[in-house]
Amino acid sequence: MDFIAVGGDARFAWMAELARREGLRTAALGLEEAQVGGLTQAGWGDLARARLLVMPNPFGGKGLPMPLAQRPYSIEEVLEGAEPGVPLALFGPGQVPLEVAARHRIWDLSGEEGLALDLARQTAEGAIHAACTRMEEELYGCPALIVGYGRIGRALHRMLEGYGARVTVAARRPRVREQARAVGARAVDMEDMEALLPLQRLIFSTPPQRVLDARRVGLIHKEALVIDLSSPPYGVDLAACHAQWINAWREPGLPGRYCPRSAGRAMLDALARLMRGGNDYAG
Image 1 (cartoon, rainbow, N blue to C red):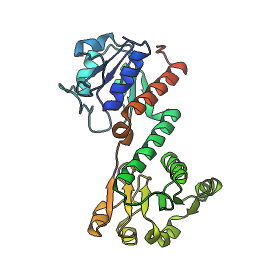
Image 2: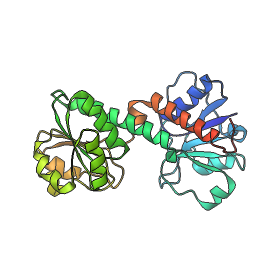
Image 3: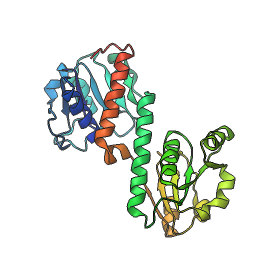
Image 4: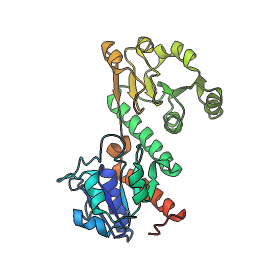
């Protein structure tokens, strides 16, 4: 068997199914509730036949996520069933234990730049979709603030400008602000951002640090929408927002919820690029 997708959300199910449609021998373990037509379901005994296992990184502190499993497996059970030396393609943060790295070749899907860009684009589109479901006005002409200008911030900027929104980017580093200005955004530092907060109707926070604390939240217009797209420790003080009756929320893992098929496609493409890059597994 070419590979087994182990656990995770619907992205992993679609990755395995799309690979099967392209002629690979694939299956899924712990994805029985994914509702992806044609997906071949594996059992624990099939792990020993896999030439590659693809899964969310189970070493980030929360174990192996299996929200779609009829019978969840632990990472210990999965590794016990796998052949020694079989590569593990992991997606997500987490430090692989030395004993696991000594037994298996580890591929870091999260470190694949093409995949990171694909997921940033999908996150931006999903975030805008989430905003539109709660907005009572069009994006055209809407004052929109993007805090941070990494991959997700850049994708948000391109899409919001396409809608005709009036985009401002807030970033700490001068070089990053210059990059934003070079492609048409108004760019300010974090201090100057504070004077603009009362004017914004749509705010996206992307850095994994508290950039909108209680003091800054107090400056936000009460009719604004605030969407936190960052990872822990998160960028927005949601409690402060709710105390001010500001509509604010987090949107974690958007590609897996908003466009799981497209995200699965992106993961499969990244896997193919890793294979072509000279890893032991040749497909």
